[in-house]
Amino acid sequence: MMGVTHALVTGGAGFIGSHLTRALLAQGTRVTVLDNLSVGRRETVPDAARLVCGDVRDSVAVADALTGVDGVFHLAAQVTIRGSFDRFCEDLDTNVMGTARLLRAMDASQVRWFVLASSMAVYADAESPEPIAESHPTKPLSPYGVGKLAAEGVCQQVCAARGVPFTALRYFNTFGPGQAYTPYVGVITIFVTRLLRGEPPVIFGDGEQQRDFVHVEDIVAGTTAAPGRRPGIYNLGTGRGTSLKALARMITRRLEPSIAPVFGPPQAGELRFSIADITAAREALGFAPTRTLEDDFDAVVADIKTR
Ligand SMILES: NC(=O)c1ccc[n+]([C@@H]2O[C@H](COP(=O)([O-])OP(=O)(O)OC[C@H]3O[C@@H](n4cnc5c(N)ncnc54)[C@H](O)[C@@H]3O)[C@@H](O)[C@H]2O)c1
Image 1 (cartoon, rainbow, N blue to C red):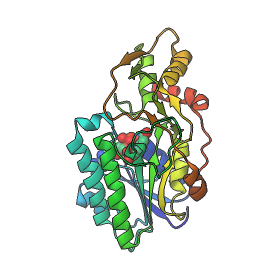
Image 2 (spheres, protein in one colour):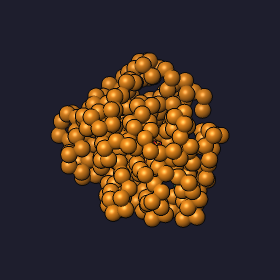
Image 3 (cartoon, helix red, strand yellow):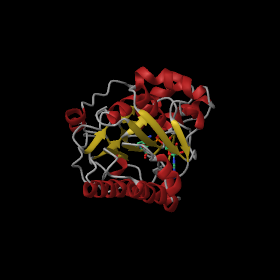
Image 4 (cartoon, rainbow, N blue to C red):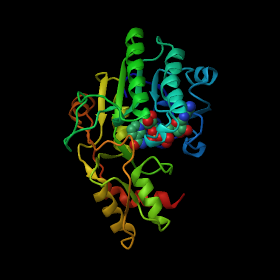
């Protein structure tokens, strides 16, 4: 990875952050993790990384975590679309003000790259299941999406003013081992967890909504590729859509064919179609996702069973 020798991974004890930390260490990059362990777990942080247990909103913890760092991967966030309608104050405080505090504390002469984990939640809904490019209008349907878009904007402006190259990566629905179970995040983890408990998966709405499910290792490959390449805003997904009905069918068939999904009311904040056009990331970052849910399904189930 060009340029970065010591990376700060905020949210590095979380699902994507812990995979990213391991990948950076494997590439020979030193890593400091800053995580308040609200969702992330200490055991997921390898011993080779330095762990600062603290909050991105706490200037003392942030200054400590930035010591000696020349690249930042900012993943710490409250990650929930639906939950952000109830907890918008807390979520915006972390996702926007936490980002602002991190930027303020950063020594621009030292940091050679700043990467933000953004989200497909910044986009306006799409009319059809066609992949959307980065030029698709941004009109978030949830407070979470509003916060991610604001974080992108403030990072872009502050980094530009200080001469720090900045890349925002709009992750689509990420799956894979290590995702914490909550009722809100990660529909695959939620469906599998419910089925293992003998409960039916709940589909909100008619189930025809489509998502772009991308494996965490592909997300990590796109993220580590960012420093040293063209700064910008890039979608990271696969370009393929899967309806929630088809997803539920595939998961029940493989895990518990006797249980049928049930349908619940549509939820606020949910996009109808959320599929990434990844042309820009392919060209600028050499991003080339290789994993599929079908191939990785058994590994995901095995991981969930261990918890
Ligand atoms: N999982 C997805 O499908 C997805 C999709 C789009 C974008 N993203 C983004 O990717 C990033 C990582 O998401 P994830 O799925 O790994 O979620 P996660 O919840 O597993 O990881 C987030 C981590 O941030 C930590 N954290 C939360 N608030 C903090 C605070 N105030 N101070 C310090 N640490 C704090 C948590 O303890 C957790 O370890 C997030 O920025 C998220 O918005 C995720």
